[in-house]
Length: 172
Image (cartoon, rainbow, N blue to C red; front, side, top):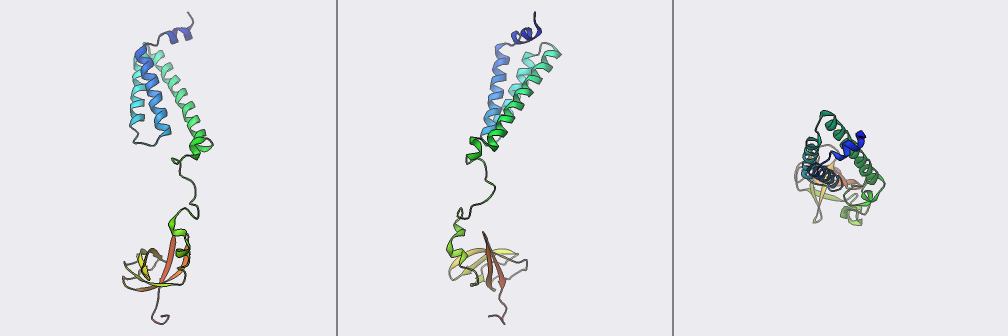
């Protein structure tokens, strides 16, 4: 009898069930973010499939190699979908950059803060919170420590960062 046919006929229902269940759980884990529980259960099912199918060491090695090839094909399809397919357009995949209007801090009020003066509500080490005429903002100093209650001036706004400097008595 042909060795390939002999190998294929050697599969019994419990081994086939473990193989299909294991591959399905790993495929499910690839396409859904989660706690990796389906992948762990899938690996356990695939190990059970190898053990149930292996009548000899050769059968075990062939089954293991077959599972590896199938997993590599699934990983390639996942990678392809992640980079070029529907998965790349889903909310699961993070985009490379933040769009200018994607945050509420990119509005005209924040951009108009440049040059305004306010008061530190928390110490800036270098980040903290400041008040600009009743408007609370997260701000960053240029690396210097600024005490709570110090008057500050907005030097510039860089996207989400509001860069400030302490106002000296001579400038006030």
